[in-house]
Image (cartoon, rainbow, N blue to C red):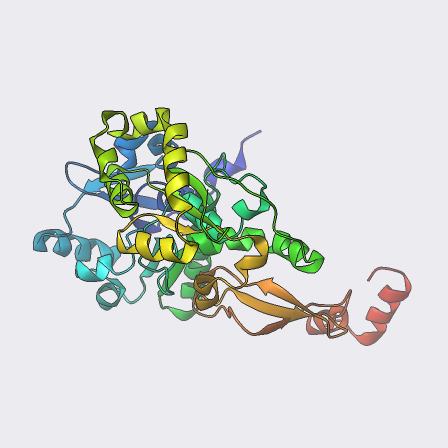
Length: 389
């Protein structure tokens, strides 16, 4: 029997996506678009390309299938003109630079929207396009720390999968699809603000509800491993540090007042630091115990070190970044009892992120919906009597 699926076009056939993302979250999301049939053009830096090509080739292979690669220097006027030409015929553009970088290059959303009002522009970042953490550097451990994921463990450590990164890619994919549908109705594109921290927090919603209702006490936690882990500060609070790259390792050593570590050849590169992770963890643990978390956060961000608070579930609700992003709301049940909620994690036109929502009672809207479909009250009453509804 002939497989009818072979004659059906992929759902995103004809959709053109410009992929300016690197590393993991953005490429994963755009790969999902490619899997559904979109033409994904990966825009890469000449001579270097996506960092993960060299950093971890298997990961590059895992999240970039089905794409085309174009090298383009966006710092050059001609490179920007080529991008503008691509934008005019594109449906979607996805980028993962730190907030403000595309604007400084002269190719931010405001500029590109003028070239193509139907463009869906998706910005994927660590902490989002606004809020006090907006410009902080970060990696997955920092995002899941802020979202409270690591605070669920008595012994925080890097998770076996990059939860925030993968979650952000998934939300980018999902909201791009929603924006494409919205454009079919309105004829207009829009800006999507996807944060890895917000996405991870969305997954934390059920756990936060449990801890919130149980008024759970903070559990004892201890340090992680190497320059990528969790460390206790002088005030007993915890901080995450994700100094993977050489530049961040250099910044970290200067920030803790131990520049002599840079002269130790055992720590000269990432593989060496991995081998010496226990020793490094001990050095960092001892140093970080000398100041409070607030002091370290201020110092590390001034020094451009990937660091953030490790929030216990009870602390997540009070985090200024999460509050600034409008991620918390409330919902009332039919009896008026309110519970705190984690809002939809992507800032998107037409999606309300704040305010108070309602939780529907069992079957509360059955009649309303059936009436809207044209069924009369007698028919509905009969179904109810028969146990159909």
